[in-house]
Amino acid sequence: MSDPQERLRLGVDRDRCVGAGMCALTAPEVFDQDDEEGLVVLKHPVPAPGGLAAARMAAGLCPAGAITLHSPEPTDP
Image (cartoon, rainbow, N blue to C red):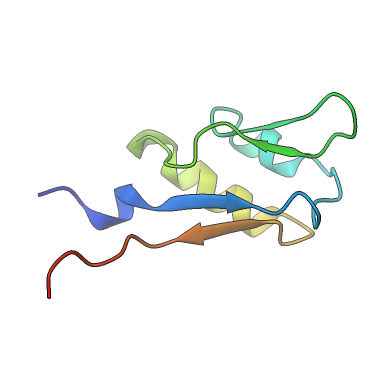
């Protein structure tokens, strides 16, 4: 059975994003910025196990709180 931490899903709120770019600098395999406004673009809502730590760090560094982490729903009753 896989570690539930590895199945975390990411979400972004482009309305809250201020375009600081900390996410794209911290976890470029998961986040990018659009060319028009510099707002966050979520490349992978479920990061690969090797990118999970960087994705968590990026969420913590976001000055606008525009990145959210969602735990997987329990499958067992």
